[in-house]
Image (cartoon, rainbow, N blue to C red; front, side, top):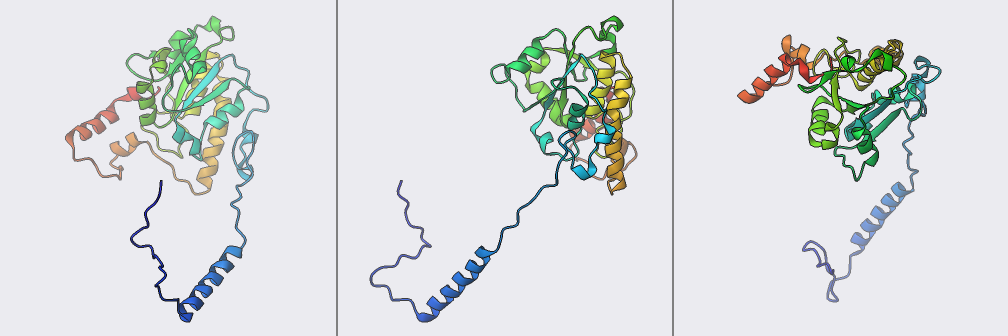
Length: 285
């Protein structure tokens, strides 16, 4: 396709007057200046060396807080991760993967999932041994589904959605595959230690914390929870020592009048916030 000249472009005809010496010298000076700039060496943005195991910068490596050997578990964890989580600096999923054997922590990134594009996930969702950790009116308490005699003999699969609550909710509602497994929630009361990131309510847990509790139930081994939470505690402690602030939950801020964002004027949104404070079924317990 031919391009027409822009109205602002200068078209020189045969009748045009020759350039003056002043204009020519100015152009030469500009060429010289830009030529000098072009000759300057480019600065390469070098990233800090990263630990291959915990995915943290080597100077703040958390490997001393990870188990020396991967935890022996029969359960396979499938983390369905929102794409926005990949770019976050303080993620907990790499710590989870570093604690588990190869193949026991599988991360699948995306917003929409189908049988054609994600056959492995589809097969897991159709497996009778699979549960998905997502609270709601249809959720059963995970402890009630696990029989003590099954520990270590039944290879369960557990799907955990990794993202903010809003992202996780949208992903669950918009993906029919995620409705196939049994829906479960955690009944244990555990206050989140992930205080360097704002949680919706006081009982909301990070992905690592949710996995730690769920695995300790499925494997009938409370030591798993302690081992998995150790690197998270170290991460938060390090961040707080280097200037990070404690992030109270949104529920805490609203109840104590510390919510610094402007309150909505729309009555429906106000009622939604009030319901948010009182509705504890939105998060794993």
